[in-house]
Length: 381
Image (cartoon, rainbow, N blue to C red; front, side):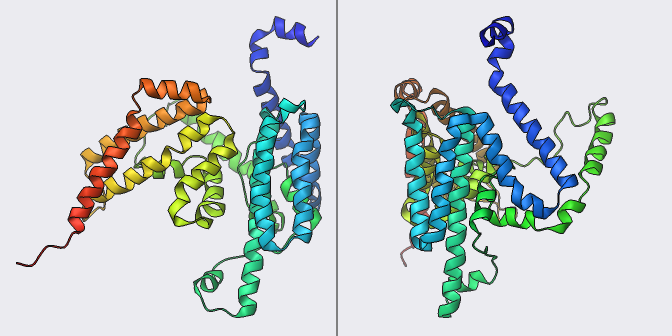
């Protein structure tokens, strides 16, 4: 039966995965709408995780067990491990487990792919993020008891910390169907606020949608909006471009990896973790580990090229050239994502003479010399 419809409708067979994904999102949207209209926040707090888990089992079948293992392990760890050991167990244990799942099909188990892979990626972010939120909360309590008067204590005054969730609350957050299949990642604090806000139920989504449809009814026929309306937000280099890409994951990397690692290795370490999160294909690592070289060269050349005193911007000629280089650099790094293998990526980059790497090394060297000469104090005559 399955083979028959695939033969009769080859186009639909090619996009079967996309159709399943679209249907899944539509079902989640309908469920969310019904819960918002008919269910209280108390019900929402107790069914979000159940719904997410049921959908995971229905869609992924045996592969659902992979995400359940990491969730159950964290539910136990949150109850019994000290907070400092909790984050170590969560971060390294979850990533080692994720790496094992990438090759688990070689041992006769179901392969982690498609929707199952997306769920596992989001679950990795959620459980590690939750562990760090608990860690921060416990550390804040410790500093208050010790009455320390340091920078961290002063920062605590302007921050909100979570109450350590119960086992059931943690399960519902981890398996909440909201964003479980597509993202975005959100913290436990964000989820807690949403599930305890009475105003959430009072916001009229219907009126907002109708207002947008009303506007589109006359803007689309007149082609309004089919051209660039300034000012257009754009990034000026590699670093800002990376920050703008998949912002929720970048937020997770910034808060739970970058800011918590040693300054000397922050950028390459963060990019290594990002590559490992995406997968274990060499192409991911070749691409992501090129970024620290680009950002280092960029920081140096930005320091070497003087900015306008009034606007704080670099000269227009430099901005145009550097943005062109940035786009070509991202194009070259994107090849690693597409080709995946070491042989194919290296062969393609060799055909391009590794121009990006040599160019960035040269720019970094020249810019470093310029900055050093500029900072060198002049000898008194």
